[in-house]
Amino acid sequence: MELKISEKIKEYRRVFGITQEKFAQDIGISSQAVSKWERGDGYPDITLLPTIANYFGITIDELVGNDKNVDERIKKRFYEEAENLNLKDRLEVAEKYYKQYPENNVIAYDFAQNIYMYCSGNREAISSYLPTLRKICEHLIANGADWYERYCIKDMYVLCDESEKEYWAHKNNDYHFLFGSEWEEERCWVHGEHEKSREICALNRTAAMYASLSHNTRYTASSARYEKAMDSRLRLMEGFGEGSVPQGWMGLYIWTKLCRAASLFDLGRKEEGYSEVEACIELEKERRRIPKGTPLYFGDEGLFAKVYAKQGEVKIYSNENLCINHYANTFFARLADIDIYYALTAPKGWEWFNSVREEERFRTLTEKAKEIAE
Image 1 (cartoon, rainbow, N blue to C red):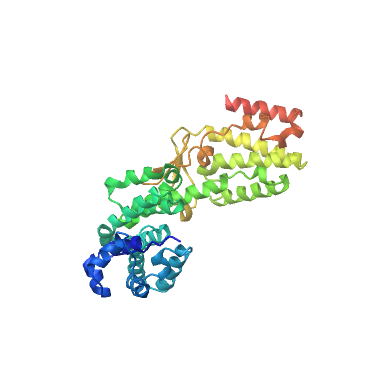
Image 2 (spheres, rainbow, N blue to C red):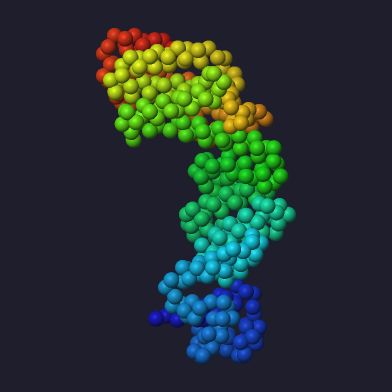
């Protein structure tokens, strides 16, 4: 077994900022002995191991490098010591463990999270802790610490100065693309821009609802279950308005009715299916008469404030003209024009229409849909 006492003594002494002379004095030996150990020219007497381990607050196994479960032991000790402490005291414990184990990703990450939680409620503390948080974040990135890294990037984005914001946004482009608007909402709140944060919050709520109601469950459900799901979504969108579907939902509402129509045909409920397709065509005609750029509101202000889309765009705006379009290529696609003709004629993806595609009534509706598309 390879003993790592010399490396460990040097590591912990430097972490705590203790000189060889101070360490030697504290445990009652000569500084020459400490220097010799750290050069690897010898080891401490076995009777000194408990004293040295206690001095650094570690186990003897950790000191000699013989603890195969050292990470788990460290985490267990930390969580036991930090449990039930208030935020400030927990931060101090996390800092102590980080100084002892700066290379331990879990300890580093936990210290970073405690910094973030403390600073997000104490703006005056940000400048003191930001350099340490930056160091931890760069360490986790360099060590490929997976989701630890992503959360730390978010924390840096929220707490950092304006000059650093774009740097951290691009440290993980995919993650920022998905959650950047939520980061910005949090950042504005932490930095005291509460009204702007509320505006972005309204945008995020609307985006989340739109994403949920846009999610395509067609290939994970039978036509019977799918029909029920689409019917529920339609009723939910109808409930956002006062007697009619708000214009902001109309594109998705039409698309959802079209999906429901396909499932109805597969279930043999042909008359209902035809009624839905006919309604889709009339609603899309009406929607396309709205001038480009017209604000399209989402209804219920308790949920969506004054968030709106603009006719022909794949973005949503707040009443202060803040804008997000992170989902433009996916969820928000239904804000633009709906291609009913494509759905009625597509060879794949709309197979539930196959049972009626040769019927005269369906062909007539297909021609009407083609006229709208052109």
